[in-house]
Image (cartoon, rainbow, N blue to C red; front, side):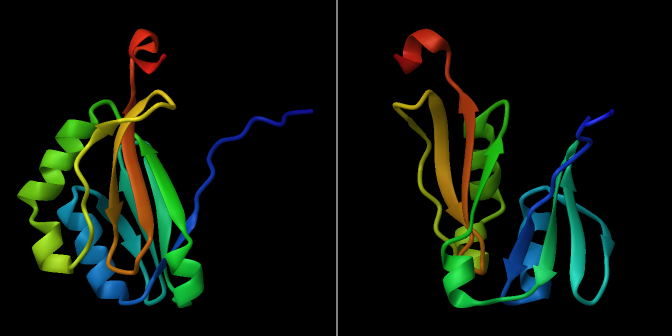
Length: 126
């Protein structure tokens, strides 16, 4: 029996599908494939599916976690891409969290909340 998992992807909702695709491109993601209702969004080996689907209660309670090597660099990328002004999203500064991550909060144009962070050394997390 082989129960090896190859990948898992979330279906992320998009209120304005074209605007959402532009937002993720601005952050440095790629869109290797897109149809009228679904887009394959990738950064390196990490990916998700962006869907033309929007229910406010769903999007407002949807959360993604992106574990990266350097959260500060990702935050700098978001600032350089001017996503707050261009897309009307929320971007908070990175902080060291008691659960052992340095992360920041970023919402996408549909209200999906992203926590983007990196692991802190164990001594700093204690």
